[in-house]
Amino acid sequence: MGNFSATDYLETKIRTGVFCRQRYFAARGKIMPINTEELLAMLACPRCLGALTAVIRREEPAGFACKVCGVVYPVREDIPIMLVEEGIPDVKWNTDNPDCPTP
Ligand SMILES: [Zn+2]
Image (cartoon, helix red, strand yellow):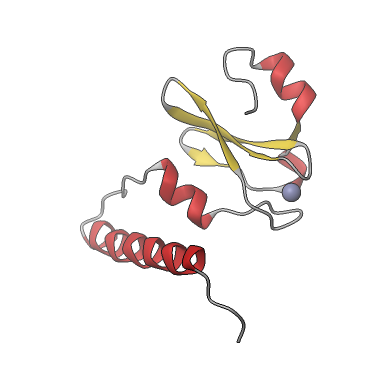
């Protein structure tokens, strides 16, 4: 029972919308399309639980960066890999991915 900010409200609204759509698509045996803004509202760093920033390559998220931890969680085959042990240090990410450096 704490403060419920405008950001919390927006995130709740996005989450509710996403879950409704997820059920609609799941009931039809389809995978739901989801946009980067919706993903960012739902995802958190698995290590510090902080907010993430999308790392964009050709208009698609290639990874999600946590500035606090200095790592990027990669997106593989459209699935964000949100595991502490899969976090790639910023420096390594930027060396391996010069086309989409961390923001
Ligand atoms: Zn973090």
